[in-house]
Image (tube, rainbow over all chains, first blue to last red; front, side, top):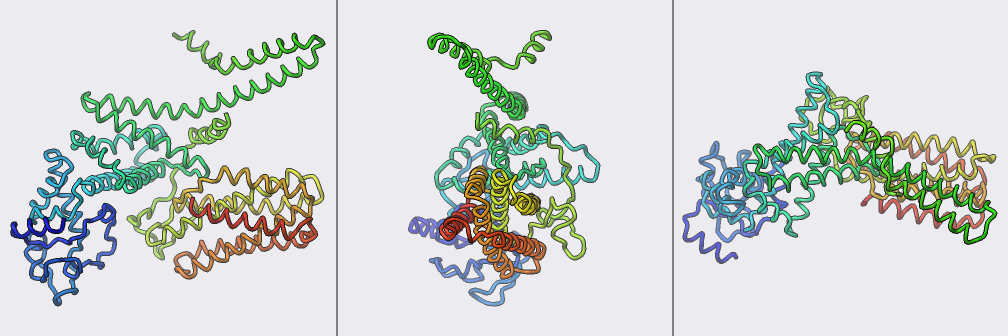
Length: 335
Length: 225
């Protein structure tokens, strides 16, 4: 791998000497929070080329002020961009080429070109385009968080109404899924790449933090097992809606939003159904106990008692299969 | 049906919930903080999450929440058996303090956006069984359980206080204050247990060792899962 890279770099006039180690997807996810922390490309011990600070100057030219160097080797200035920041910029630039090239190194190479770098810069990344997809997902999640926070601000300032939970969830999931629309053609490919074993930790992490964010802004304050139930339910809703969206050809994805609405409504009803099952179950148990008492008090033969108990139990158990009678009658009267 | 029973009240609450989101700032430090950078305001739904050691704080709050939840259930079990005996009032009083602790940790959990441990349903049952089981050994048995558990918990709180002080006592001032207060309460419970003849309980040392081992395991698991 290093050899082919070496050859390609000799063939192409390189302005940038990339590090030799393949970068983990997680490196893309790490955000440089401290502007002062810089990784000097020059001091990477794995470099095969001797890199002079002067080599980096042409790279910096298209972008901003020329960095000033205090010396060769490890010294860097405040304007010096870290490797991670550079990668992020390349990936962001690469996104516009995704509809054409898919989530591949070609798109990354095109992105690098627009920044004035050599196409060999794409060698910094995995050959399956994982980092590009993870970067995109991360970006979308950040945008969603910002959107939800904006909305929350408005509600607190009294400039907007607080939405009911189901509406909030619907809108949040819709807003997030709409961010996929420009890339919808190639999104199935992205999904399959995200499911690759080496990507699963990162993609799962991104998914769970997004769902947690949505629930947080929806006002979830549960501190018991509900915390997990709600997140699991919403994850299910999100994933299934995403899959429906892949195959939706209706105008502006109407069918998807209707599907989403139904799933959220189902989730809300789940609570009611659970209640009904519980109360029906309790009623059945009481019925069975009553049946047992009746049978034990009946002064008849064993066979008759057994028959009586069986009959009473079946009568009680059938309650499980009858939907709530009152609701049923109401529905029948109205329809 | 058991699953439905567990899910039903939870989802019922979910439906009825219309909690207003109070207090705005500083989820990611994007909004200006008042002078002095208060981290826990009067409405505790928001806390600055910027600059704190999230993994450490997460673990601390998660395990403490689980601990208080478990203690709550232990006292509930004890009350179920000994509620009408002479030890009833004293156990009730200790239980009330634990309920208060749990409430505070619930608030902290929401404020710091910490996830609760998955094992909560298990601690629910295990705690009750432990409390009821030891109470069946008599009043002294219940007191022995209290002594064992409270000793475990106060040691645990002490090590957490040490961790936080090593990290940054200023940043975690309120959390430290709360944990110190709770540690003092738990020590008080421990002393009450000793006063009420815990050491005269049947197989006291065996019981105490077994319970403390269980507590250690519970702490280990709750921190991680």
